[in-house]
Amino acid sequence: MTLLGLGGGVFAMPQFRLQAIQQLHYDKLDPLWEYSGKVMSCTFCHVNKQGGAPWNVFGQALQKGFQASPKSTFGDVLFAVLSANGDSDGDGYPDATEVFAGTLPGDPASHPDKPLAELEQDFAAAGGVSMYAAKKTGK
Image 1: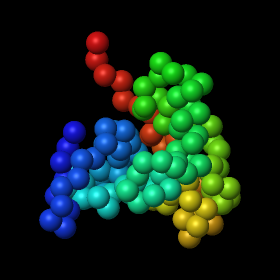
Image 2 (image 1 turned 90 degrees about the vertical axis):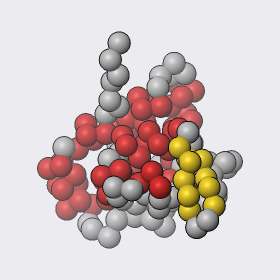
Image 3 (image 1 turned 45 degrees about the vertical axis):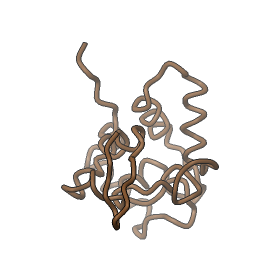
C-alpha cells in the first residue's frame, strides 16, 4: 500500500483506489497523484469522505459486479460497470461519461456542466469506454 502525506497526516490509499486512479487515467491529471488525496476522493464509491460503509450507488454497482462475477478482477468489474452504459446516480449522464468528465458517477449533485450530447462526442473522440479497459498482466 502507498502511504500519503497530507496536511501533516499519513493516509494509506486502498489498493482498489490505486488501481482505479490508473485505470481511469486520473493519474495523468497530476504527476504527484500518489501524494495527493485530491485526484480521486473516497466519495467516488463511498458516501463518507473517509470511505468505508455505506457505499454510494456507483460503489453498489461495483459490489453487484463482484457478486455476479466473484472471480473477476477489480479492473474487469470496473470496466464492466462502465461498459454497461448505466447511470448509477440517475443524473442523466452515464457513469463512463462522468468518469471522463471528472465528476462523481455515484453522486447526483456531481455532474458535468457540458451538455450530454457534446460530452458524448468528446468522449467518443477520446476513445470511448474502451480506454478504461483493465490492463492485462503478463503470464
